View 1: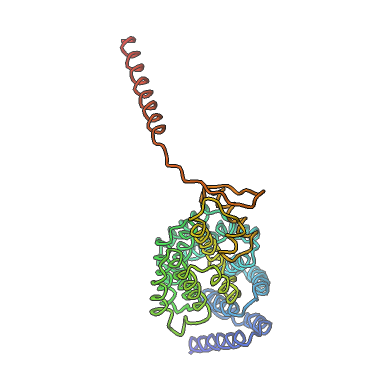
View 2: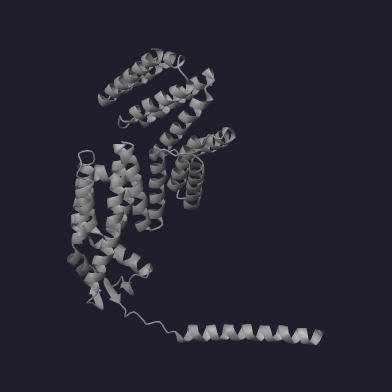
Length: 388
């Protein structure tokens, strides 16, 4: 009977929390979580940690409340210290580090994570260590420190291999692996990781994270010029009510613009879906890379017939401002994507024929190098003979 009462109370707590979240009443939700603390003292500490984690997840459903969540986490950490609940405190600290990362307070997030990693290693809590290592990897990635991000992810995998890892946690490892592969330009491997992450979150009924993986799957397919696969994935996986919506429509519009090779269509998509596309840094970053690549391809196609052409004429052909076209052409010349010079006086782009590589010099240098090695070996042999 006592267990049934606790289960009923827990169900009621979740239901009321969900109701507050749906109505956006974050102050009421915060006060409600505080008011449930006396109940936490009557149940097991592990059960308390589970309930509080779920309530924090419910709190996270209310948009634009990261700062409020961080403040509440700090209050909860103070309460845990007073009550001597170190197990719960460490989990709340892990959530706080994740929130600080979302708020772009990287220095504070990294300091908290480093301290937390030392504390958790002492008690050998593998599950928590996996969660912390994933957050640490995300922080290093945000700071553009890819080697450390990969190191933290390797630590997460090692800890996960030593225990039974829940599907949702394994999916977190997969999505971070996919992001790191994408940063290195390995989009094919990234797609495999995002697919595994999608399956894991879908199995765990975490629709929000599953939708994120689905968006990333579509984005890497566009990056590898596989627009046909984008439509197939949308029709098979994105058609479900759980995932259909404006975010998937935005990715489909990107695929359409990329397939049409249209700069202006791309600009229209970015303007129409700006709110959806800019809030996710991964989508935003790769969208900018796609647009830049498309501009380069269009410029190369337009100037191909010319040996000398006015920049103003190129700008009219591509229908973009002259300043933007001139800056891009200059960048392409510096990056050796274009062989030519910009004549600022006449306002012309002068193109050169790409010189074929003369392999004679390289072959000559290789021959001299090999002869040098032969002479060194003969000298060493002669010295051994003399000494003998």
